[in-house]
Image (cartoon, rainbow, N blue to C red; front, side):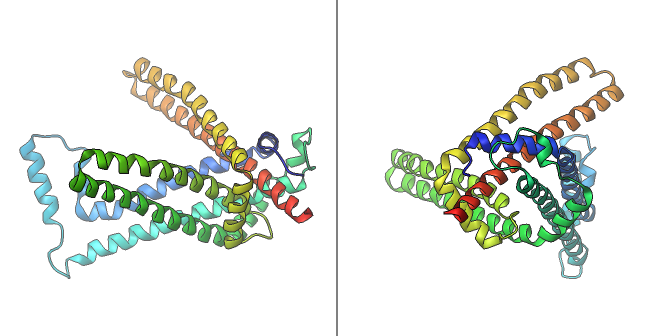
Length: 317
């Protein structure tokens, strides 16, 4: 049966409740991505000596001398380029590893969610136990099986995003040309007139990419099939998918309403007690990441429910 947006969110929340361990998995993914991303910057920083800038305090003359010293480390010949080139290669390998980690986790998370939705009763199941399916063996199995699926899909999404970003650049260039040729009002008209379709296109791209990620977890899916089928689903269920995204934004705002005042209060009350402040800040960061992970997994589960209902409906028809 075809699900409404609210029905999909309901099933997604039941799946989230049943497989709550995915929140911790999503949290771990975020942590690993942050660590690996930062680690990728370390080799070039070490080679160029940029780490000296981090704790540095001094006069403008001291800063000038330090910057000149760092610039002197930039190689002037081919032989001197080797350490810098090796550091760039090392950084690229670390970031590539981060990308593979991301795709592995996405494959595991969406694989579990698709399995949970598949085993649950269709329609409106009353208990979350219908969706309970998480275990680490299955997570690893889905992650390993779908790693390359998500690797190529994410690359496709990034390629489309890059092409769309070039449209933004082209619009900016056209507005600049109009300003030089016809004046500020012409540039304003070109910019404002182009921003409306560009904004709508960006929204469609965001919705399509989320649907494609969910569709890819279906066993009969593939990269190109998920890309095409998610576009078809978006065309038929645009307002339902948009409503789900709005609910996610609202959930994020609810988290901000709670965490921002707590963060400010923590800084004000414990600013003279560094250790207590550091522990409180770390705990608050953990809670923020956990809330964000829960919202992310909930959206993914809801998208999986919607996509599965659409694919099932097409099969019936």
